[in-house]
Length: 79
Image (tube, rainbow, N blue to C red):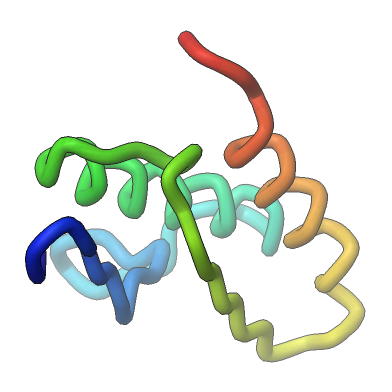
């Protein structure tokens, strides 16, 4: 956290032992987004406060599934 800004980077779907979690790109994106959400929450923010989000994919064919998962997490409304 730097003033009113929170920076979260390098987040993946890896577990504590370095194993990939999630059976496909969509599941991996959901796991990663939940980790980002938790990091933001610990700083008093949430996904609705995102100003910029960059996602890298290793297989461009997964981009549609990644976008859908990202949209589901970012625009799901208040809980």
